[in-house]
Image (cartoon, rainbow, N blue to C red):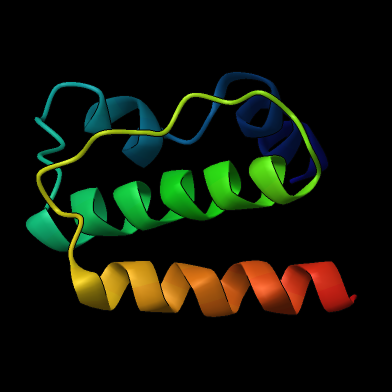
Length: 78
């Protein structure tokens, strides 16, 4: 049994190898979340005085600006 488990640990399980043949479309929510993380990272870098280019995204909104401002403030308090 250990040899079988060890073989999969080195080469991946059959299911994970099969997954490579299917598309992995990104959802709109995932893209929006990625945009929010990039904007939050930008704001933290700016507060730290780093020169950092502001990310551009179709998903940015006043609401995202507010959330990422709060996120940046929280991170800087830690």
